[in-house]
Length: 153
Image 1 (tube, rainbow, N blue to C red):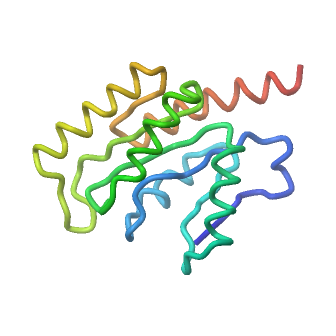
Image 2 (image 1 turned 90 degrees about the horizontal axis):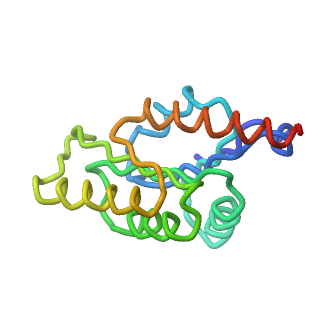
Image 3 (image 1 turned 60 degrees about the vertical axis):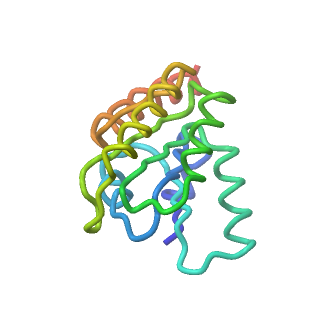
């Protein structure tokens, strides 16, 4: 379900784009209660050109782009987006690798090793890299608090 939290406050609240694994993963429902700012959830019941356009716009205008990767991911586009953003806007990019089983699926040891190396690559580019939603949410809270202070001054 696509959601922009607190539409009325979006001019004053930093925005976090929730990118990454879809395919029935519950990571978004676990991180949303931990966020202290607005977020854009691109998951919709029916993917179409309008949904794609909203996603691209939200990603382009988000203060933070978060990519959470779980064993339910089927493609590699989220990985490519995370690496792309770690190059183009490293201070705004957060990559989270959730290695625990998700929906009955697990990463193979080779996949896990490759994704950890990808996370380290993003980190070397200047992005943030974590292996827990809680750590990512804490980082986002610190970053968005700083952003709000800058807006007020």
